Amino acid sequence: MNAQNRRTFAIISHPDAGKTTLTEKLLLQGGAIHLAGEVKARGQARRARSDWMKIEQQRGISVTSSVMTFERGGITFNLLDTPGHEDFSEDTYRTLTAVDSAIMVIDAAKGIEPQTRKLFEVCRLRNVPIITFVNKVDREGRDTFELLDEVADMLALDICPMSWPVGMGGEFEGIFDFVTGNLMQPTGGSKAFEGKIIATGGIDDDILAENLSERGLSKLREEGGLAKEAYPDFDLAAYQNGDLTPVFFGSALKEFGIVEMIDAIAAHAPPPRPQPIEGGFIDPSDSEVTGFIFKVQANMDPNHRDRIAFMRLCSGTFKRGMKLTPSGHGKPVAIHSPILFFAQDREIADTAQPGDIIGIPNHGTLRVGDTLSEKNNRQFIGLPNFAPEILRRVVLKDPTKTKQLRKALDDLSEEGVIQVFYPEIGSQWVIGVVGQLQLEVLISRLEAEYKVEAVLEPAPFDTARWLKGAEAKIENFASLNRANMAKDRDGDAVFLARSSWDVGYQQEKNPDLIFGATKER
Ligand code: GDP
Image (cartoon, rainbow, N blue to C red; front, side):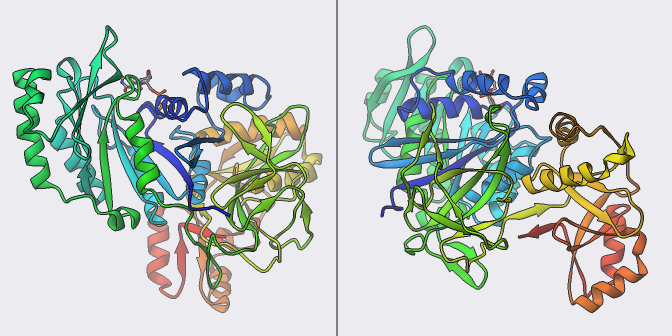
């Protein structure tokens, strides 16, 4: 068994920072695809095949996650794609529970943007270590020190620049690698990186004068010297603990910094880590096969109406045909046709190691948050639900379809598309989402898959909080606030609040209760 050579990671960024481009270039370097552009082309082919994904096409954004695997230098990299659109991030959040590290891509002209920051906070919840890639240095960007200080200040992280851009935009002359002393330079009409590397003994080496303009050289020496003094050295433990981020500069488009990114993940990013279960941790070296479902996706293949549950393997060596039992359901599932996601194609997996992702076709038995294990005595924790930021009442156009609607809402909430709340008073169900786009996905899937026509009406609530505390205290609170009480799909008590002010007010009045903005399953 070899979990030590697995690196399971995701790329987080604000839309347009360059995640897709970087993904393509990483896969290209890793030999997983042969033509840049295939990531998007493949995505389009898949989208065209699927009904409800029309939304993606119309909006030109990706709302589905996938898994790409490549190998290099004896290391297997599992790159989990995360939808980047700011409207649709619950999937992204959950995907981040299945990785051991992340690359944070920042646009050199924009710095930390809102979505970068949100995703970073999710990583921080789980101490996911982060490597920073400052992209687009081939274009005019902000001052390098200013960018670094912004990362440090806004994210409260120690930073360690691992490389340095010699100029940006029109003055861009290359990237200097502090670790190897190499200077990578643009060549040809496109000014891309085509392998021109000047080996040096450091920023004071005379050879640099032959390859850089006077201005470029003096800037590199001045800034590079200052940077080495101003920032801490790279500290592996601090990085792996999520306290320090190494920062690389590059251009995904012009292929600067790509190999360095792969090498950094290989050398520093942690292999599969022990995963939290009730009462402790499961170590990857444990011989029992265990894993958890972080995502369920429908309609990947229009010929089969079933779903694919994405499981992250946490321990043991998985073998095809193995029987695993989902927590809570009790019935073992034989996994005959597991799927490993390769960049080019789906392939039948025979074995998989901790850190690998397995796609399990099923008819709705597997839910997001389920633990699968050989002995069914485990429950992984820490897979969060997030307090919805938008709440809507679901109103049926044809009231005789109540049963179908309930089934659809249950299914879709199990997939993690929406959250559903059943109010204690009244018959109108309330759904919650973190982004507007999820509402469109909901309506279109209700019609396409369940033949249910519904409209969404404003709900008199602004947000929801999961109540935690002694049962009697919760019951007492509920009896005083019936009109605001609901149950989620697991039957847990939820307080539907009129405003965040309301949440604060109730929290103050009820110090014994916790009004949770997240719920961990
Ligand atoms: P995503 O939304 O984060 O996936 O971003 P994309 O990879 O789709 O990139 C957004 C835009 O920025 C596209 O037009 C890319 O061609 C462009 N882009 C990405 N990386 C670079 C880069 O390094 N330099 C420049 N100049 N443009 C880039």
